[in-house]
Length: 272
Image (cartoon, rainbow, N blue to C red; front, top):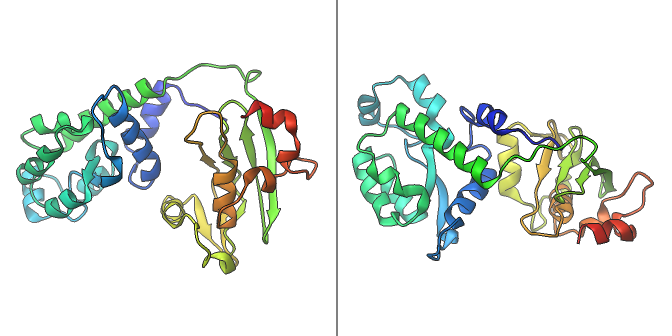
């Protein structure tokens, strides 16, 4: 498991398409909202939305003074994304900044929107500044802790079930599961089942992490599943995605000897 330092994170995120990985972006936005916030926030009413709209109007091009290529390069950057209610987003649509900011004022209590309300004109310079500010907040919420390779500890794991073969690694420090490139997922005949994590599958396809094959899907890049809870693992979450349904990861993930991880009592004790 590789963890970038603060500078490496900045270089990776500064111009990245963060809307393609909005599940990860949403986790950060939610954590930011809850950090040092004593007021209750109903996160279920919110979604990740664009400030410069995905479908620009002539008014937007005129106000920004940029061409279409520049617009598209900046559209999905972290600084151009925020949280808004779905109702407010429907109202804002592709309206100009003055109108859109007035709508955002309704959610001015949200941490992520407070600074936006002070901005009179939304432009590329503001996106640059806000992207850097949000990256700094990522580093604050998820501080980098240097470690040597000798301290790292992970277990090679595999799934051979329901017509797929997948390999990966279980991180013993945080319970995350990294799926190797080449791993198979979601056989086509199982797509009609429930709990297939369709949104995540679509995001990974758009991000070119996952590719559709004749028999299902295959990872063309490594991908890591993280657990949302303390003293738990992403074994079931990852197994559920790979096999398309609710799965007990301790049963389906196997060690190098072909035994289920659930049989390893020492491992279960360490991760529970």
